[in-house]
Image (cartoon, rainbow, N blue to C red; front, side, top):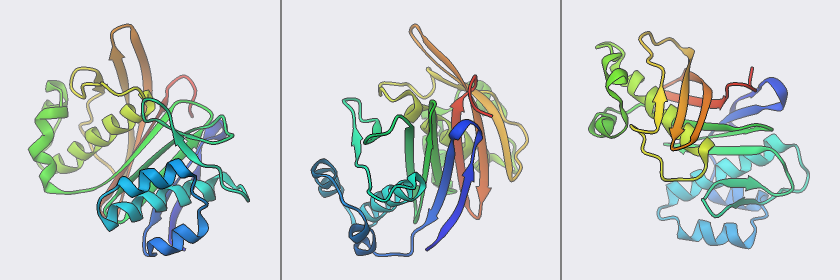
Length: 217
C-alpha cells in the first residue's frame, strides 16, 4: 500500500500522504460508505476524481485506527466531519495523490502538483505584498505555497464566502526550501484568527498545512 508518509504532530494532530496506484474497486471494497457519501460520490464527474475522493477517505480511515469506519459527513457549509469524533479533519487530492489531516484543533491541509498554469489565476489569490516576494528562480513554488496556504485556510474556516485576496493574508515567503513555515491570518468582518503555516516539497508536489497558532507545535 503506497502510504508515502504519516507524521504525528503535537497535541494529538497527525497527517498523511497517499500515492494512488489502486483501482476504485480496491477502495470501495474497504469503505462502508454511508448513503450521503454514496450520493456525493455519484455526483463527481470523471473516474480520476472519484478515485481521489475514495483514496482520501480511505487514508483518513487508516489514520483513525478504527476497526469500523466512521462516515465523513459534511455540515451545512460543506465542511467535513468524522462521525463520532471530536477531531477536526481536512482532506485534499491532486493528480494521483491524496492527503488527510486530523487534530483536536482548527486545521486545514492542501496538496498540489506543481504546474505552470497556476500563473493564470495568480491575480485572483495573491495580495500585493505576496506578489512582491516572488523570486525568479522559485516563483512557481512560491505561488503554490501561497495557493496551498489559502486553500488550507479556507478549509479551516469552513464557512465559505472568503475572498482569497481580501480575507486571507500570508506572511510573505522570500526563500523556499524543501520544507519551511510562515504565518497567516483569516480576517473577515469581526472574525480574526492567526495560523501557523507549514509546507513541504515532496517530488513535484507541495503540501501545505495550517493550524491555529495558539495551539499547534
